[in-house]
Amino acid sequence: MKTNYKNLTIETISFLYAILFLYAGLNKAMDYQKFQVQLGQSPLLSVYADWVAFLIPLVEFILVILLFIIPLRLMAFLGSFFLMVMFTVYIVIILNFSDYVPCSCGGILEDMGWIEHLIFNAVFIVLAGVAIWLLNDKNYKNRLKHSLA
Image (cartoon, rainbow, N blue to C red; front, side, top):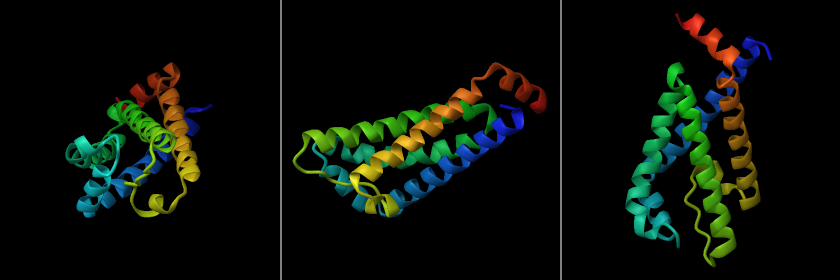
């Protein structure tokens, strides 16, 4: 894959993740009480609801910023990958081992069914994996260093 296509792919994935995390973080922050209450209803997170309600939007906002700082982009994608995997594992655990399935997602994600939500998360996990793979390509790294210098 030529560098221009790699750049375009990485920029596109960065933009998609930035939209996702900015939207999700703003949605949680704007209706913080509701988000906190929903987390408090979770059989896994109720004890940590206050901390989790504060940390998740904060982490999402930090990742949005890091996605646009080119030297920190790999770290941003690693964080994004990890966060999306955590969200997905949480959904799978809740769906399989809990009688009550709270949804602390906001906006359009709240209107999705669980299967659609898992597919959505899987797509974003794959996108982060692709970006991480592209950013770790040695030829790409060398060309990027020369273009930034």
